[in-house]
Amino acid sequence: MKRFADRNVLVTGAASGIGAATAVRLAAEGATVACVDVDTVGLTAMVAAIAASGDRAAPYPLDLLDRDAVRPVVETIAADLGGLDAVCNVAGIGTWGFDADVTLEQWDRILGVNLIGTWLVCQAALPFLVESKGAIVNTASTAATDATPYQAPYAASKGGVVALTRTLAVNHAAERVRVNAVAPGPIDTPIVGSFLPPDGADMDLITHTILPFGEIGRPEEVAAAIAFLASDDASHVNGHVLKVDGGQARLSYFRGRIGGRSTMANTSSRISACSVASSRRGLRPYPTNSPDPSMRLVIAAARRNASPRDLAEVERLMRDSRWRPRQRAVGS
Image (tube, rainbow, N blue to C red):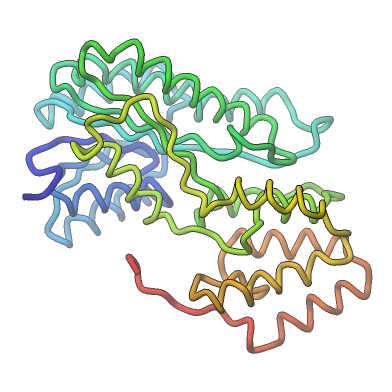
C-alpha cells in the first residue's frame, strides 16, 4: 500500500525546485496533489509530467502576495478534491545583500511569501485538516537556525516559519493535526541560483558558513523528508524542525572551532579541495565549472573579489577536466 493512497495533498511552490520534487514524490506515493504556484507555465508543465507518469495532480495558480486570493484557492482545492489530508508549504523567495542596502520593499516581499504566505495557507487549510486529522509541513531553512551572511530578510522570514510551526503544533495538537517543518541547507534549486552575493561580499565567509562540505543537496532529498513528515510514519512527530543539510551546521561549527576561517586568497582552493574530498567519498562533487546555479554564483562573486593570482587559479581549475561534474541518477 502506498503511503498516500486516497489522500489529498496541497503543495505550494510546486512549479520548480523542492516544491516540484515534493509534488512528484507524493503523487508517486499515491496522493492526489494540488500543485500551487505563481509560475503558471512551470506549473502546467509539472502537472503534465506527473500525469504522464500515471499519477494524479491538478494545477492551481496562486500568488501568495495576493493575500485575499489565498483562502478562496485553498477552499476551491478542498472542494475539488473532497478534502485535504496534508499541506506542504514550500514556496519561497530570497535575496542576498548588505544590511545597508536591503530595502523595505525587499523585506515586505520576502516576508509576504515566506512567512505570511505560509500562515495564510495554514489558516485556510486548518478546518479541513482538523476534519481529516491531517498534517502540515512547512519549509524553513538552516538560515533560520544558524548564522548565514547577507540574508537578513530571508533568515528572519524562515525564523518566523520555525516559530509559526511550533506554535501551530501546540495550538492544534488536541485536534490531532501535526505541524512540522524541514530546514534545508544549500539545495540545487532556482531560488539558490537567484541568490547572488553583493559586490564586495566576503566569499570565504560564505563558503565557510554555507558551503562547508563543498557539496549541494538535491530537491529530491528534501522532498523525501517532507513526505516522511506528512505521512503516518511520522505519526508521533509534532512541532519538529528537521534539518536536511548534509551536516552543514555541525561541520561549519567544527571548522570554526579548530582553526577559524581561512583567508580570501584560499577561497578557490578550498572549493577545489572540497570537490576532491566529495569525489573520494562517492558524493556529488562541487566542481568549479558546475552547471548548478549556486556554484556559478560563488565563482562569479569570487572573481569580483579575487586577486589576479586567485583568478588565474580559478580559471585553471575551470579548464581542468578533473572538475567536470559527474552525473547521478535521481534517487541514487
